[in-house]
Amino acid sequence: LITLQSLCRKWHTSDLAIIAILNIFKDMCHHIHRSEDCQANYVILVTGVLKFVKKRKYGAHVCSQFAELLGLIAMVDKAASWSTRVADDGSVRPLVHELLFFITSPFYQVRIAACKMIWTLFSTSSQQQVFNDLLVAVNDIFLIQGDLLVDEELDEGVSRTATALHCLAAVSAFTSNWRCKALFNIFY
Image (cartoon, rainbow, N blue to C red):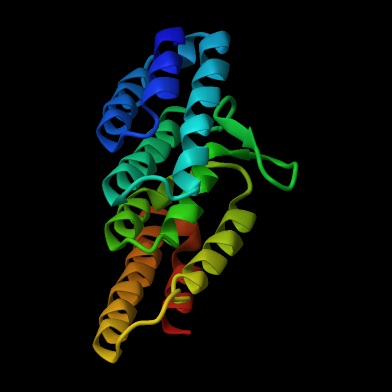
């Protein structure tokens, strides 16, 4: 992990290097559960890259890959016993909750990648809070930043509506406990 840390430090400004590093993170994810020290260091490295991603330092491809990584981590650590981070408000949350950030991305590709992994949010214990946070994120999808032409605004509105529907459809398909509420929110 020290070598990977050095790579992150040196190449964090390169999209291509970060994609290669994210692929290494994905490969490591299946094996990291064997050592608590490795888990802690792994989470530190992943959250370090996350900080740059959240500052919008990378393009859509890197952000999509990161959303996939979060989903993979959630699949490996279903109980979120080691894949947690301290949020800005001081609370400890599973890393997978960061998918909500990607749901509101300005890039359609990133939003869809996050939607594909959104079901992994519901493997954690606080499902009601997750669902409420997801609804807030889905509503935030419709906030378009910047001045757009009428045609661009129409196109962006359609793609964001598709994202919201895709997200709630994924919840309906993968989480039977939340199916009715997700469907209600589609038609509400």
